[in-house]
Length: 221
Image (cartoon, rainbow, N blue to C red; front, side, top):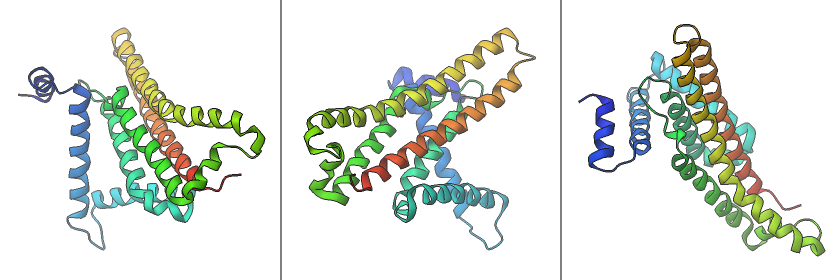
């Protein structure tokens, strides 16, 4: 049974949605990569270990530059989300496979994790004073600022979800149409653009997630 029929088998007989199966595939891939990169850690690393060190080091530097010294504690979450989204985005470029991130449910699950964690951190850092971030700088305008702030926070997971979904799914549709119209001339430049979009959307989700968490830790102004 080849890979594609296996995913169809899961969806048909076990009622496991296709995007869930592909998400599991991405998770297994990342687990295997982590194992291969860490099973023999040497002073003189292998090519694969060196590649993974560069990737993880780059994410670590970006987290520290964006979130400051407090960012290290959130590195496991940010790095996991970043790698999962990137591999999921690129998986859709493999003929016959689908991107888990081309499904709203996958993106919403990650966005909700960030959303819930943001407010947990806000309450943990500030306690009851965290409510001040929703009231604005002028007390007599708090009745107006409070609903606006609540709506803006509720929109965050929706924005993260729809932005990633729209760019990835839209890119797949464009690539598929161009393959049908001009299969021998257009695909390579478009595939290059699709890879670029996949990387950019990964960075956007990553950076916004870090900014939301940092914002929750800051003092209200």
